[in-house]
Amino acid sequence: MLKPKDADFVERRNAAKDAKAALLEKMKAKKDDPAAEARRAERAAIVAAREEREAARREAAEQAKREEAERLAAEEAAKKAEADKLIQRMVEDEAARKAARDQRYAARKARKGG
Picture (cartoon, rainbow, N blue to C red):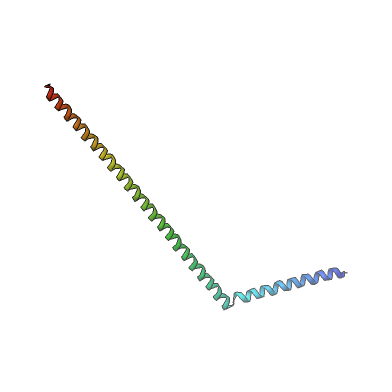
């Protein structure tokens, strides 16, 4: 013996089952719809274009990073060359001072006769 409450439950369960079946049929119909296929293809094209733009943007960023690294390396090499040039000039000046000192020493020795 079914109580009215149980009958109400059975009705709700059947209504839910019918609604799920109707939703499933609607989804199956959309799946085979050419317009839906066209929308999916359009979305896929948009996604592919977006990925291409992102890849191009990443490539440009990497290129900029490489160029910056090359510029910094060139600047560093120029600074090192300038420092090496300065060191070389200091060594040459020191050698010239030593040569002048030795020459004065030799001249003094020659004057003293000895």
